[in-house]
Amino acid sequence: MERKLYFVIGTLWTVVVLAACLLSSETIAKAPRFDIPYKDKLAHFTFYFVFSIIWFKYYVKSNPNTSRIKLSIRIFTIASLMGGIVEVLQYYFTASRSAEWADELANCLGSLFGVLLCLTLFRRKK
Image 1 (cartoon, rainbow, N blue to C red):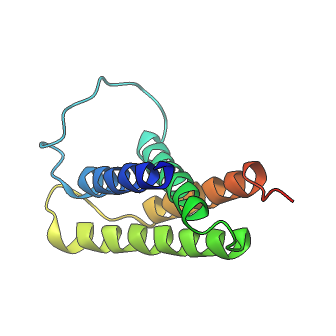
Image 2: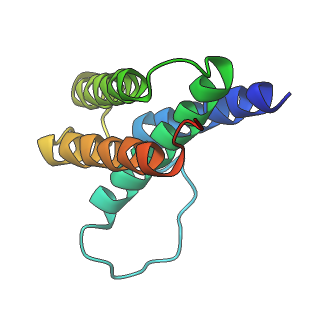
């Protein structure tokens, strides 16, 4: 049951990330303005940080004997590719969004920190 819950949460989070990155900025409700430097990069970092943690937990529940290192590499690769594809889609297919390499860097760093946190916190019990 817990595995299915992580799958549903992971799927919903992935849809939220894709929608937030690809929908027109007018479509997304305006949040209160906070003067936080690089808040766009912080949002990208957070999206992929949470993405990696949720999917790490799902795959650990699904395959408890899988190597945590291989799993981390797989999740980081998927998150990085997804972030890169989103940036390409923003560049070619959206009018109100722009693609930035710094966004992809924030995506990758968020995922990296997410899987490193998971490797630290969710160690296999011996």
